[in-house]
Length: 134
Image 1 (tube, rainbow, N blue to C red):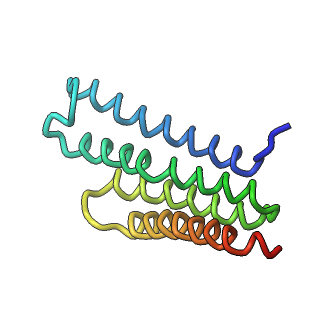
Image 2 (cartoon, rainbow, N blue to C red):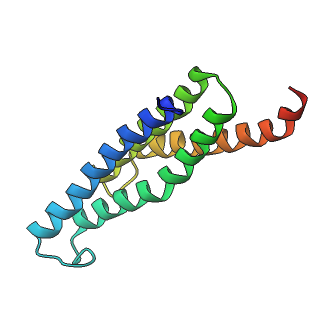
């Protein structure tokens, strides 16, 4: 039995997205014969940033999602945060992969990611305060 089924679902979906982003970097490094870094290739540079940005935001957000799922049994709330994070990461990856400039996908993607992160942090902090009274 999985103790955190909702978090497990989103972590798995996001892991597949991470693998896809990793593959984009690998394929483009091989295509451009770049062993380390971006070799001055703008597209490869964007793919590397998409991958890195994902790696910077997803782990802490998933950790907060798991903590919240352990703390409260409100699946719709966990799905709300997990869904926002997943959609945000997909939109951000698409937007940055296709343009170095500002795009609505990058904007909405980062907004959803940051709202998920901030919302989960606030929800967990609120629970720490209110849990003794429940």
